[in-house]
Every structure is written in C-alpha cells, then in structure tokens.
Length: 290
Image 1: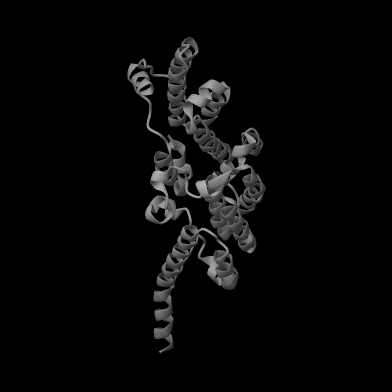
Image 2: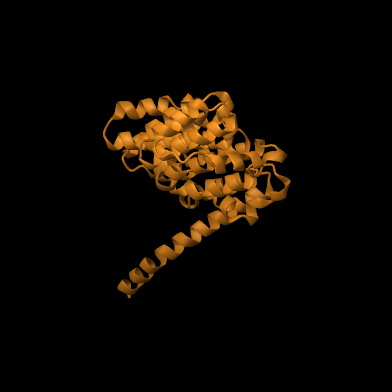
C-alpha cells in the first residue's frame, strides 16, 4: 500500500502508512485465509482473469489488489487507475480505505509521469477524471514532490485544491489543509496567512469525536504523544517573519489545547532550526567586520 507515495509524496508516504495502521482494524480470519489460498499468478492479465472468474467478493478484491500493485510496480499507473475505477461498489467496500488511498496515490503518480513526458493534455485529463472528493489529494500530492511542474503550475494546482478541500470531512481535512498551508508557504507565501486562518476554522469545526486522526478511544490524545501525528501539525517557519502577530493570534483561536500545543511546538522547532542554520553566517559576518 502507498508504494507510489513513497517516491512521489515523501512528506506523506510514511505518515499515512502509520496513521492508517493506527486507525484500521485488523483483518478478519476470512481475509487472512483468502490471502493464504490465493493462486500464485504472475501477471496483471492473469490476476484480472482470475478475478473475473470468482464469485467470492473478498477473493476478487484481493486478486484485483494484487493486479493494481503489480501495475504500479511496473510504473503503469494509468492501468492501476483503470482497474480501480472498474471495480463495483461491493469490491470497493471490501477494500475499505485502500481503494481511496490507492486512487489518489496512483492518480498523482500518473499525472506526474505524463507531465514529465510533456503531455499536458493527458496530465489535465488524469486530474479531471479523478473523483471530485479526491482531486485535492492528487493536486497536493503532485505539488509535494513532482518537479516536472513549473512554479506557476504548482501555484495553480494549490489554488484549485483549496476550495476542493471543502468536500473532505473531519480530521482528514485538517491534515490535508495543514499540508496545503506548508505548500503555500513555499509557493504562494502572500496567501499563507489567510489559509492558516481557514485551517484554524477547520480544526475548530471538527467534532469532539473526530479531532484525532481517528475516533478510536485507545488513541485519544495522540496528537502530542505520537510523532507521526504530531508531524502533521507543522507550519512553515516563514510565517514568523511575514506575520508574527497574526500567527500567534491565529493559534490562540485553536480550541483544542492539543492541536494548539502541537502547532506551537512545531513552529518553535522550525524557528530554532532556521536560527541554527543562519547562525554560522552571522558569525562569519561579525568576524569580517572585526
């Protein structure tokens, strides 16, 4: 799972794997037995053929999953997307969160690949054919690490993703909005503060049962105790220099003390890191003047 995200989206790849591992229930005995009894098939075509012949929804989902992963390993992301989009609702349901995760992951990988080939028309079509609820995921994923896009194209992707995030619910929307804040800090700095205010509103609208990455009571208060989740509350250090008062005021408005603390802690760490980076230059300047 998330094989393309490891290379295309390094900021999210490991975070998402571990976050979903926390929130996802363990497999049922039936699913494990299906996995053990799955035929050893070597090609995407053979896996698809076997999936088409079985009436067992769980086994069909497993075979199609293997076909998707095989296509992705071969960098044939468009084929992976085609298989995902061909699934009926029963199979999608059997895959749980995996279908959604693969769809935006491989969608962003396919768009990056086509842009590297200078096929702008195909790139746009891949994004447009992404389910509306996942288009923001694809645009943000592209912006994170696909160096084939120009700065102006990245800015356009981010500006398009901003309203699309409105269709995402709860804690997931918080995570993606904060990712967008960090990207705005790099590519659209003048608008970063207004987006941070939107992120604060998103956090405050989240219900009490969904303020964490998932509502499982066993991981309540995980924002400060889980490094993976804590890292999702990072803000760009440039906010300190562009609007220090505005940042401090926005953070005071965050109702959840855990989220507020996580944002402040990460911002302090970013500021200290930047200070250490600049300190040698300041010493060299002082020596030169002396």
